[in-house]
Length: 345
Ligand code: NDP
Image 1 (tube, helix red, strand yellow):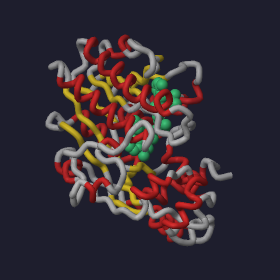
Image 2 (cartoon, rainbow, N blue to C red):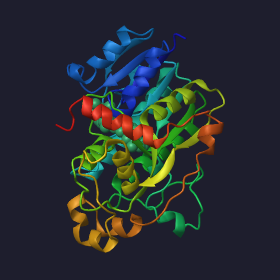
Image 3 (cartoon, helix red, strand yellow):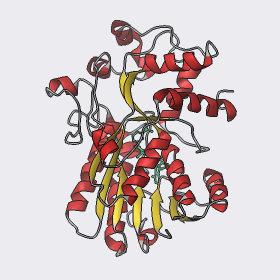
């Protein structure tokens, strides 16, 4: 194999699985981190590298610093760009979400342009770049969302994380279309669950499960519907996108759509009454009153709670050949990992 892949966001929840899989397939992984001295963020990946056929190089780069990725990109055959904040707990949406997502994408792709060696970029976008509020589907007269659709309802004020993802992906396509050196393949995962390797991550995927198991939704689960996908399948999709010469365009990833209450029911079926799981679905009227406690605005509740969504995932199965892990197994493995790592103590 012996190819060198520049990976951004490799210390993250999804990224650490991607790095592991690349190393185990014998790649040289050139992983960028913000601060090389924070070894605890990647020591476990060095251990994986030692036992694998691959090689792990650690380089320093920051999404917010222009030119930061140029040196690391020189000599790399491909880039997997995953780094971007995935948090709903931010102070300033522009500074904390949009700037790292959009300027970071620009910095990484400009590094690809300047490298003279990079032939492919795999970008981690999101279904948040495909649609904003769940009600968008009905308002746009659609039966389902496909790779043709782009989020038009998010803004700096309303669903800024989703806005950061659609703006970043559009910027990537713009930079891609202005050159002929490298190909762009985009992965659009729905909400990712499953066991974590990452030792410190701010990902909302991990907070969601922790909140669920520690009783945040005990009195009632908001009737919010998401696509769900296993973190290991998301990582696998990145490798398939990297290795398949016929992969092109965007790829929605989702094993199935389900509600928060459905996810809780799966936990209950596997772990009985061990956790303070939601006892019912929260009536929408009730959410208007207490939604602020969960960080939900009135507009968000109105446009998302109780509105179904459907995601077309044919392309991920047919073009990438991705095989999905059932959600029940994803959730069971995630809870077991959290138990083992004492996350809930
Ligand atoms: P994590 O928070 O676990 O990972 C984010 C990664 O980005 C970390 O490696 C983090 O590095 C890095 N990062 C953040 N800010 C900067 C910066 N300024 N400079 C350099 N690196 C930075 O999140 P996830 O693994 O969940 O998300 C990874 C990607 O997947 C994101 O692009 C996210 O939008 C996307 N995604 C996630 C989904 C999910 O459900 N989890 C669903 C769909 C898409 P550090 O370790 O230093 O903090």
